[in-house]
Image (cartoon, rainbow, N blue to C red; front, side, top):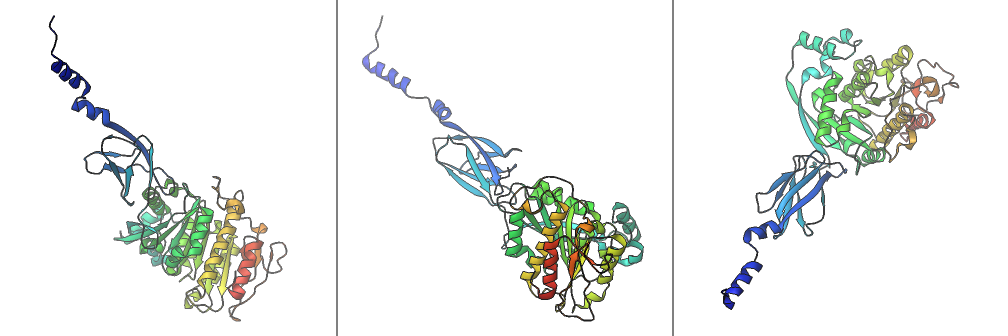
Amino acid sequence: MKTLPLCCLGLVLFAFLTPDPCQRVVADDVTLHGVVRDTSDNILPGVQIAVVGTTLKASTDEDGRFVLAVDGSKPIELIFSKSGYQDAQLSLKDLGQRIETKLVAITDDTGLITYSRSISMSHSIGELRRDVEKYASREMDDELYREVVERYGEKPSEEAVFRIYLPKGVAKVNGLFLISEHGVGGPMMEYPMVREFADRHRLALVGMLGNAVQRGVYPASTLDGVLVDIGDHVNHPEFGSVPVFTFGHSNGTGFSASYAAMRPDRVLGWVSFHSGGSWHLVFPGVEQVPGLVLHGNKDSYFDNGQADAVRMLRRERKAPIALLVDGESGHWPRDREATFSLVLRFCESCLRVRLPGVGSASEGVAWRSEPLQPADIPSGWLGQAYDREAGGMQKLGIATYADYQGDRETANWLADETFAKSWQSYGASLEP
């Protein structure tokens, strides 16, 4: 038997101890596992993950998870990207740990997420103004829409821009505050008090600007679909079903009242601030939702039947609605702070009436899913009518429904004592 020279034994031993280059790559392969969320702690599907300096890529699945094999012998940097969100870059130190990262939504300089959509002007209730007498008593459903389009033709589309504010750290919002951004609605979206209100009640603010939506979009299915799409865009699918408040100023009041008329089972309350007319305030269905119509006594647009519309809604339809007059203002609010505070107090009163199981305990908690309750007129308070001949600021009388001494059929309806006192104080001094 031949023996190998010592030098040959060394070569054999060296070859045995030195790993094959291919084996080294396999040995250094590391499989990364992770999950990506947004800043509301919702999972983010469809996020692209790329390894810097390589062609390696992966994407998150429907559960926001990803798996990615990398060469662990080199420093690893990952870039996370998704349309509508800021890119995020992450340098990995411990390759064995599960990766968790969050993407921040792209916002404008006011901190709002922007979404745009082309909508046909045929979807605006402005088309109904062509024949108010014919259409004012009709429900704004799909049948009416088809009839109007057949009569007047399909109108071209215009871009509608939506701006969205999401409450901080909320995975699922309780509801939406839909705001026509025409007029004072734009500043309202950006006002700290309103955003604090949204945070406190876990509400998303959705501002809308564009003729087809700010004046009032119909049928309701059109706006319903837009809200579903916006929910997908901001990773909040509940946008398509949660309760809403509506607000509009000037021609934006067409939106706030009409959506309440079309979706009384979804709208908690609606606010018409200094409307340009009254025809859009009385569509069938609006009487099922608490409403607040505000106006300035020195506003020339106040002579277009708003007070008569409120009295009619109270007497003929038993509507839970009130008119509140600022005796010294014109078409714009004299004091935004006071006006926005009053509007938010009205919204909270609607919440106590429409979701009594939630009520004042809604702050900072998730709402239970339950149907909206109708307003019980005898359980509310009533307030006197504003005297336009006397003018100026007026401290109008308020009382429970049972104790009210005037005409209960036409008196302003106020949800409860808390809001009744705010309504009275604002009319007298702009201090809700």
